Image (cartoon, rainbow, N blue to C red; front, top):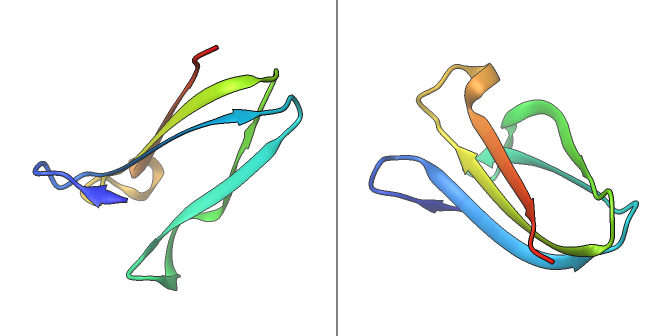
Length: 76
């Protein structure tokens, strides 16, 4: 992830995925599993074949429930 001038970390990935693909992730602080958000893995399920764009944002200033935001768009 890359830290922006606003202090929010962002990661953008684009790729082709098949329907039924399961993507899981979590965000850790300083490469340590002791500080991970969320405590359990996040899951993204691809609903149809195509090229998808994922924007993942981590705001360390928000409370734990609102630290992560994910925006997913099918490009084609």
